[in-house]
Length: 330
Image (cartoon, rainbow, N blue to C red; front, side, top):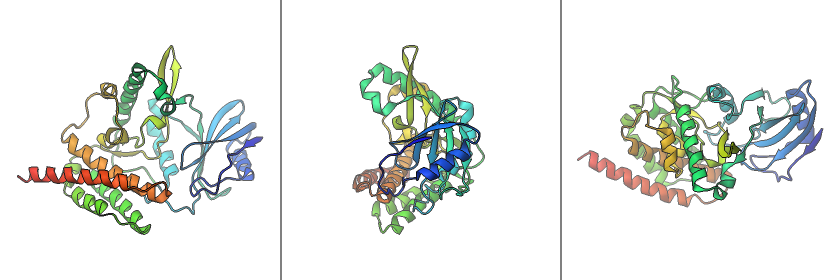
């Protein structure tokens, strides 16, 4: 088997995997098959990803960070969560990768790994500027229809799938999520008054949040970087939706693409009416604030950049929430 690896430094999350370990993984995952090549792929920042050729077919091998790596409370067991929620995406079509093998025993290396089907397509983020407005609008429309299909799937509890805990109320899950991020920050030695202030304000809206009674499937990371497109019949079409490890059950408005990303009006034409439109703007504001807390935490965990910009945005969100409270209280 030909093995081609990237020249990685000892990255905190994407630590190099040895050729010996990769060979053993392939022997285990593709038992009885002829594996001719394994090639590590660039991109991403969390898992190590490899393209594998076995019996003339292509597969994707994804290996999670080492078990000793410190991760946020929210990031732990990402791969196991994705494994458990995948059956809910499978009925939605071939654009969602399907897991064909998983090993969480850590017998080969101290890391979870899965083998998934290969999904054809080009990353939309990489070529969207080369497409016409009409072509991008057509893709946005299709993404909207897919997002609506995702959110039409419901469950009994709120929050991520096992092994994470489920919650009876939407507000209860979100408060646990936010205080978990706050704990992560403090463990790293960072305290932000904006985070503390936002969580205090967030608590004033628990009744509104707990009025969301139906837990809906939310992809959690739906945006251009996780969408693959291919040209079919002269038109660009969505052929892949990747990275569902952040998926959870909650409010449809909390989807990343609804709070953090500027989308084309064509997206909403494809999505249609919200299932629960009441108080949509204040809900969106609360979720946008939570997203900024999450982004700031990830910046600190990965030493990527100073999260001051996220805190500045959070300041503005806090001001808006305070104004809303004043208006509501007369």
